[in-house]
Image 1 (cartoon, helix red, strand yellow):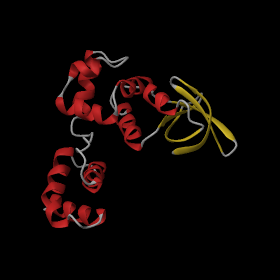
Image 2 (cartoon, rainbow, N blue to C red):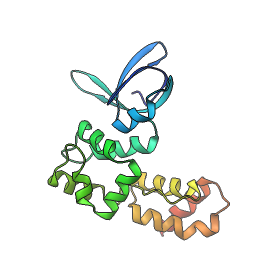
Image 3 (cartoon, helix red, strand yellow):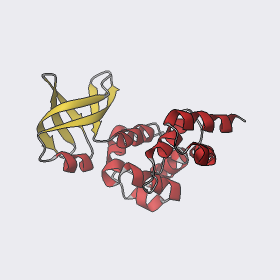
Length: 188
């Protein structure tokens, strides 16, 4: 599977880029937001989600890893395909999506292309506590620790509580120590 591509941009169109990496040109579907970020650049790096179908291998690219993770969580929702997920992430950033889901803002989700009332309700239901809301500044280790715990299967709320509960004790420690202590707190 292709996880990341870095290379020269040959073509940047709304929703699609052609990036050359290792002498091979890859056609990658992107969000409209990514198109705006990439327009005018000669080279770039994209985080890739590879979809293998019986008739094609399709690549979806994102300038940052948070957007890739949001995309993968969106397509895991029943009834949400890659095109709808790209539409949602074209309408809002990964952080805005997390805030929208946390707030239960049905109307905001419905403003995304391809998202009706039932689809928006499904997104809110299935992604509740699964998307990390970026903190307002501060130390990235705290957010990284919460994200790691969520990836291990803990709810966003439990992960946040555990990290907050040990943060004062491990503020100067590395991420591994923060995780170790938060896991101890969660397993008690």
